[in-house]
Image (cartoon, rainbow, N blue to C red; front, side):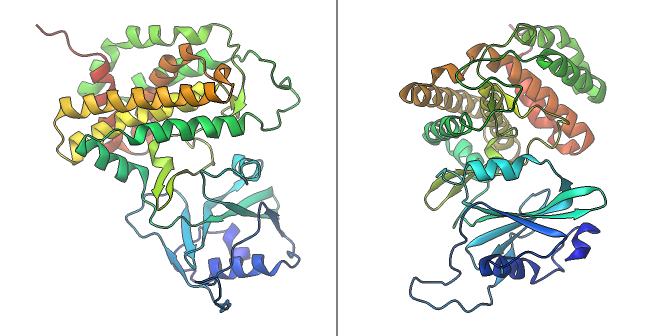
Length: 374
């Protein structure tokens, strides 16, 4: 186990995940330099209620077809162990968020976090959560919906996002944030958005770069609302909320991955809820671009689908907040600038990490700013 701090866990390390789950279920003391933070009780690893636990759980990975930054292992079809590769220094957003969401029904049940202390401090090694049977990645099932022209799912996503924000709005605020229901202005939003635009302009080359440069003024104007003082409540947000983080499984939908946005350094954990909602809404437009490129969906059909799905999502989100007496969590004026900033960040991510992804944010921006034609 000490080697986990020196090299990423890979499929060669068979048995380590099952051994960890077995040790956690044993409930004994954790030997130094390791530590465990428990969120809720692990489930039985028996296959039926009356079966005896064999004590030797079977493990398997998700397979090469699943695109993931870290390495996840399914144990006994009950538990998922996500090994962070590489391990992450604490503080890390996931443990606190999972602890807070232990009773939240629309996520994989959180069980535990494994850490170890080394010469650099305490580091997060693994997160242990529940396994959701028949789960499909959001980029897959949502692309299917786009290709088929189905949008009813968007209402469920809107309610899920609202319920998530309602739950996160009760997260204990830091000392620098006034206790609810007070509102607190936040600074630096405009500067960060402007920086994202500047980086997107600098890193996007070729025909796309020329097109983007020609729209720089219009894009910058879209960011203007962020220069005004923000007085919407600041809540602990998901930070990387897109359809890829929402699984469709046997019993519905579940939001996952509370590790924060890997492309944004030092992002404030407390932000307007509109930040998450804007990213989720724009991800539907990205799905439309995926359907055009990979499913052969006619462009106009895909764009119409995205527009309808987006409106259903936003309406369901607003209605759910209103039902629960918290419409104040959403500042509508922030949606558009956050959406433009997100597209810029997608372009930066494509340039630095995944060049083949550039078609998606460029497709969204070109659809929003169509060429002048008769």
